Length: 118
Image 1 (cartoon, rainbow, N blue to C red):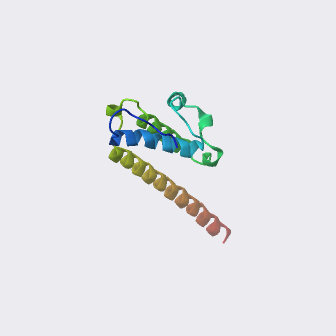
Image 2 (cartoon, rainbow, N blue to C red):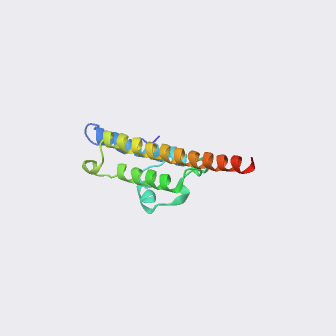
Image 3 (cartoon, rainbow, N blue to C red):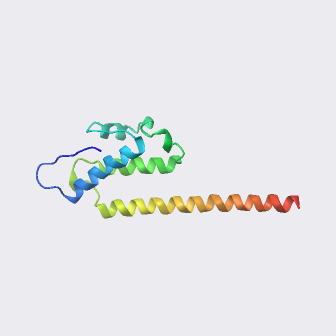
C-alpha cells in the first residue's frame, strides 16, 4: 500500500487521500505513487484488473470518479470520510437495486416461458 507523508499532523482529509490510493490499488491490483493521479484523470481503461471486468461500465465510471475526487491534492477540496462513506453506500444501494431489477426481469421471463410451454 502506498505510504503518504505530509508535513505536520495527519488529518481526516489525509485519510481520504490514502483511502483513494487503497481503493485504486484494490481495483488495479498494482501499487501506485504520485503520478497515478494523472493516469486516473486521463481515464485510462487499462487500469482496472481483469478480475473487475465483470463490473458494469456505469459502476466502474462511478468508482473512477470517486477516486479522482478523493485524490485531490488540496485537502480542503477533498470530501470528508462521512461523504466518502455516504457515496459508497449510495453506490451499493444503486447496485443492489439494479441486481433486484435484473433478477425480477429474469424471473418474469422464466414465468412467461413456463406458462407458454404448459
